[in-house]
Length: 172
Image (cartoon, rainbow, N blue to C red; front, side):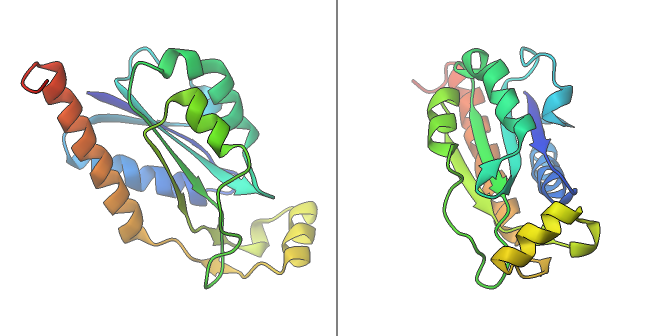
């Protein structure tokens, strides 16, 4: 099965999570393509989609939201998972789901959503981003838990293998 991992990442940390998910899925025998959501013209070639986005000020990136707008109707008949990356610190803050995620889950018919802690490197931020980080007193560092990412991706792989078996008619 061909799987698309589409990732909207502003500074690369969320893309690295998408790459780690793709690596697990590839290791489980899936043909995986990782792409920026803006670069995806068609979802027909994919049997499943994992869509991820960085989260800033409680919202998904515009590229991920636009992907949902373009493809939600065409993905209703195949497995879709969503992930977000953004909370930083120990414990990670802010916790909770992005404000639009419940609507995106419904529109995409997503099988699940997972929020992963992110990475904050102030040196790569634009002036406005540094101001927001200072305002909310966000902690700098890499807070991503790679074992959580790999475990989540492994569960997706299990679900996809079960889906393949169902399609072959071995399970009703």
